[in-house]
Image 1 (cartoon, rainbow, N blue to C red):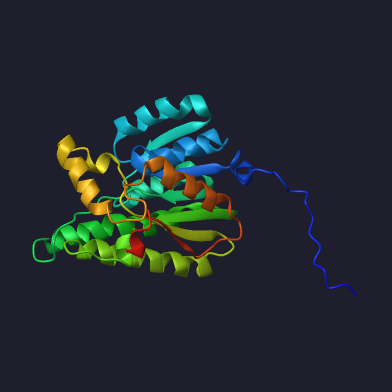
Image 2: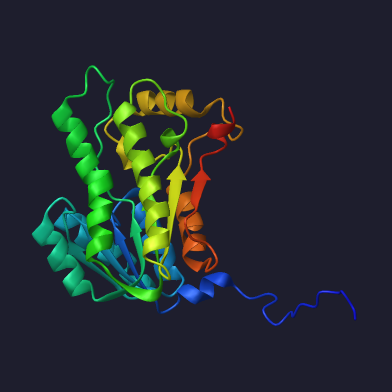
Length: 255
C-alpha cells in the first residue's frame, strides 16, 4: 500500500477572494481609515456592502464614493446606544461578514486619564464590538473580524487603558470563536497606521510623531489603511481560520 499523499489541483490558480462576491459585508466604522478601505476592497471584490458610522454625512459621502464599485449602502449607528444598535442590525438582515474597526479611545497616561474617559474608551472599543456581535444575525458560514492592536502585548508608557482594552478584545475573540461556531471569529491587531486619527496635527508634527513610533520596526514606517484592509479580506475568505489574532504591525513586536 503506497504511503504517498495524493492531492488534487482543481483549485489551482483560483482566487480565494472570489468567495466574498455577492456576500453581505457589514463594516461598522466603514466611513474612514481602515474601515473605509475594507468597504472599498470588499465592494471591488463583488460583495454587497453596508457601512455604518455615527456621522450621517460621512455615511452619505462614503456611499457616494464607493457606490460606483457595486452595491453599497449605509446607515447611521452608535455602538454605545442600545436602540441604535438594535435598529441598525434589524435593518441589515442576515450578514456574512461583520467587520468592526470603528471605535473612539482616549489615550493618556494612567495618572492623567480620568476614570470616566477610560470607561468611555472601554464602552466604545470593547463593549461596542460586543454589542454589535450580539445584535448581528450572522450566516452560519459567516465570520466576524474584531479589532484590537499590538499594545495588547507590547504596552508602552502612556496608554494603559488602551493596552487593557486591546487584551480584552483578543480574549473575547477567542471565546466567541468557541461559543459562536460554526461562525468564525478572528481578531486583527494593527500597529501604527497613518489614518485620519492623526489629521488634526500639523503636517510636520504628524510626520515626526509617526516616525518616532515606527523607525525601529523592521518595516520602518506606519502602515496604510489599504494594507490592513487586504489582510481583513483574507481573514474573511480563510474558512479554516478562527480564534486567531493576526498582527499587522510592520514587525513592531519583534523589537
